[in-house]
Length: 276
Image 1 (cartoon, rainbow, N blue to C red):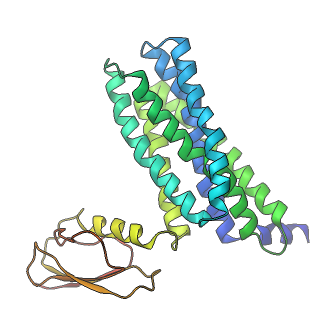
Image 2 (image 1 turned 90 degrees about the vertical axis):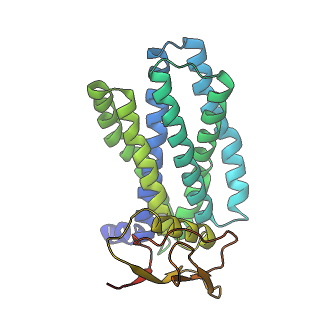
Image 3 (image 1 turned 60 degrees about the horizontal axis):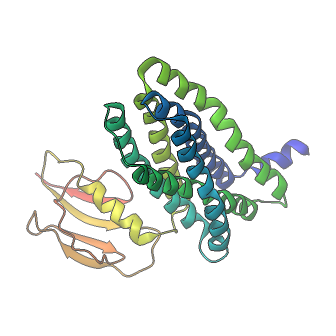
């Protein structure tokens, strides 16, 4: 009975939430663990390093408070997805800045403060929201088991990935080690997008259209449908300027011009008709 109860508590949505928040915890612990060493090795003083790290942690005071308030009013899945998307974008920019710092360039204290505070905010805002969502997704009255599994995932994942990150830093350098954390942040964002498909249909559609511009096909294509399967908004028709006669039937309607070149789609329910 106990084994069955645990299996019932860890449903597929809970499993996805464990992955998302576990990877998020890995990114957070990795940044907090290795960023001070990176600053010191690039010439920063202990005082500046401690202040910058403290600023990132201090952002949690505001982020967790606002996360709890927003969680009562907005979709919790939307908060998790958008916060992870914001974290990935900010972390990517900060990663590019780290490359410049490693080459000897000096960045302003205010500049670093902004990025560390906003990155910390995006991480911490998901803490109360994730726990509340795990309780909502629990089945069979197994709230405690579901919440415990989600919290445990946040501890297990860092214990696995942080030694790997440290090994990469020792072998190849800080930039290569942080590249793993950056990749994990995008993985968590992608999983949250797939796990919470109803969070932001318009934003998700924008991402779908951007994916169409990544790959040049070796043959002419006609895009029949670029559909958001999770939206019930009526379709709208757009002409694609790069290829006359190529049209995309899109829902929901976009508030921006659709002028991407017609390219081979990657995924996300895109239907194409290939012609020679």
